[in-house]
Amino acid sequence: MNKLLTIQEIKKLYEQNQISSKELRQEYLNRINAYDQSINAFVTIVESDDSDEHQLIPIAHKDIYSTKGIETTAASSILKDYIPPYDATSVTRLAQKGFSTIGKVNCDAFAHGATGENSDLMITKNPYQLTRTPGGSSSGSAAAVAAGFAPVATATDTGGSIRLPASFTNTVGLKPTYGRVSRYGVIAMTSSTDSIGHITSTVWDNAYVLNITAGHDPNDATSSQHPVDDYLKLIDKDITGIKIGVPQEYVQGLDPIIKERFNSALKVLESLGAIIDTTISLPHTEYAIYTYYIITPAEVSSNLARLDGIRYGHDRSQFGAEAKRRIMIGTYCLSSGYYDAYYLKAQKVRTLIIEDFKNAFEKVDVLVAPVSPSFPPELGSVIKDPVTTYMMDVLTVPINLAGVPALAVPAGFSQNPVNGKLPADSLPCGIQFIGNYFDEKQLYQVGHAFEQSTNYYLYRPTLTETT
Image (cartoon, rainbow, N blue to C red):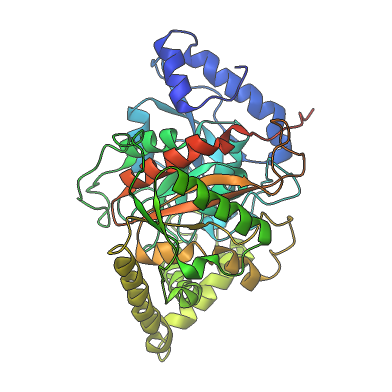
């Protein structure tokens, strides 16, 4: 494997009988063994696959996805040694279509975090700069795809946990419409905002995977029966005439280079025929992060109540600091005398945020915004300040509260490539295309057009082999 392959390229190699499933898997395992000691993407590696299939595509699963017979810890000490007796629905659907588990990847414990540093197991590093965070909570998923350890990794996005890591690692990440993909078998964080998605290196690959995972699941009462699109159907169609809105509230307080890259992205979209509208407003955006950090701890405290050490897992003393913090905040918000003042009021504000998006989509087809107001921070620089860490999701959380889909796509680097090469200290940034409910197909159309015009995804990190 002379270059890092996309799913689309792997499929072509199989069609031309240029590689076997066993050879491909070994190539990925060799790369993991050579480089992952410095990145820490994987918590478990599956060395072999006993399937008789001859065209399997390796996939890494975030460690909160139940995988039958493979340890699933949610990157927490409390679930150490837990072996699920069944697969999550997404794992099952992907396996049925030729995806083979190559391992489980790290994340913030129970997906609580924006940097990956809340993992009880290890700290995952950004392949582009090992001193930087790859983003969280899907830190291992993003790092594994960016480093070429797998062509795709499953992930979850509760408040930005797919899009932020994708933006920080120059990968493509989808937060689908809430209920578009089954949550069954995925350890719950915030049940009303958890979205089950994935990270890939290209938009085509991302759409290909959603074609497999999307759809109603009778095992998940929150999964939608809305018809499933063919997400590749419009992917090569030009975007002339598509109305793209820029929310005014999402372009405030940006790092100057992030702002410059975002403005450049708008020019690219205009050159592709899109109509850019900069008058769009989502007026309740300023309340979103506060609303989210009332609703989320409240639901976290409820979901983690089952981990009492009786049915599975160790006793509650094994909870990490962030899990304990969220349980205490959530229990307080739900307690007698405070429920109306906090949780109920937060739900009312959430309704206003939903209305903001509905009003915006009466004027435009798609919204576009930066994913993060800043570049990946240094490891250790924000994790000791929970409020600063929470604010990293300021541009992603409103989308989760509204339940609409969003696609993160590479949008450039802190330093531009020189003579086709990326400066060693350059860091990625991304933009997110935000769509109306169940309109992922159009997000892929716009995202693919932008990706193919810019080709940022071709700039992979330079890794140092560990011995």
